[in-house]
Length: 192
Image (cartoon, rainbow, N blue to C red; front, side, top):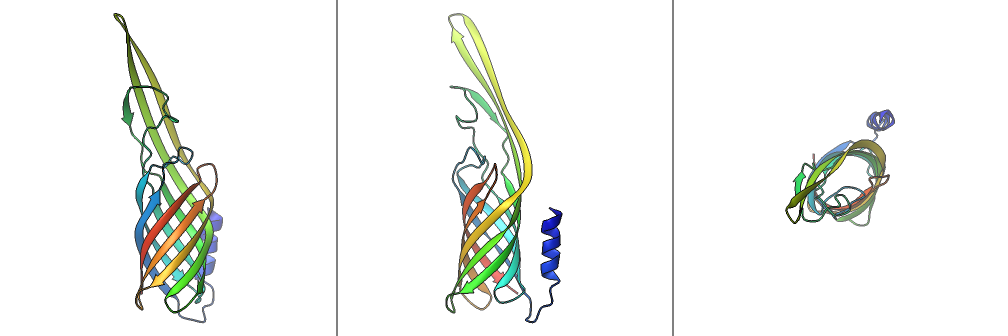
């Protein structure tokens, strides 16, 4: 994580010939249910801050929150059961270097690479009741995972300029590692 921080400070302190441009963005990220990445199916949200140190090179800091995973058969192996669901949404804090290539006045293609810190907190407790004749039998299963770490992340964006200060950014992002996940994002950007 120190390397990511120092790289971010280095980029911000580079001698800048052109004026530095800052922008903020926010939007929605679309996730598919993934038992290995422990993400649920649905829409998460993201916010971020970016800067362009030149017309084509910059840095973005992004906070993503995924959809919490629901108890699925690959995690909890019980039949009809009462399940206590304490899963929290996965979170990702990413620092990405960006390279932008303008196709024309309205459309820009951008590639991004860097590191993402993830936090996962899933806790499922299942209690199953089986009745054989006059005897009741209870079976319990517990799935608990609390994990965090840093992994390589890459992203590609298609940016449509709406006005001098506003744009729409369609992104596909991939985080690698044991809990790697894919996400498709729609972001609205405002430059100042």
